[in-house]
Length: 222
Ligand SMILES: [Zn+2]
Image (spheres, rainbow, N blue to C red):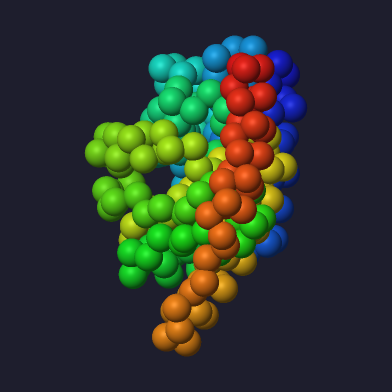
């Protein structure tokens, strides 16, 4: 396990941080980090309380889901995480949460358009809705894989929750906070029955090009 200790510790620390921020609770959601040297990733175990978690509870799987170090059952969404790492070489960390405001948009099927500069800079041109499929199924894995090819770093999973990517874990956590703020602001705007104004197209494209530059740098390193 020693070889993967740093990655497992990162998953434990981030799980507790996301719980403290209110983005994860009890056993809902999951997160992983890519281990580029071993074509593998470290992921949270299935159905295990984040606050009890220690590094030896974290599962390490290769991209074909063969266990390299697992004392517990890995997350039921492990296949989805592996599929994302395969189609998105720029992604080194994945967080799936059931955070409240994006989950509310997930119920009314409202994607978030380009509302703020920082949103596009970190999350992409829009936060799109991934059509519903039951958790842990090949159907969800395929639906997600198709959708994430548009280079955005945040998605809303219909009737489920949120999906965040980052070139590193710190950025993925930051993206969860940006998404929460945008989802709340957009929900309040929808409640006001006023039309949400969007940032100018040219500004959106400049912000998105900065995100793409980051992504290309991470993709090249993998
Ligand atoms: Zn979930």
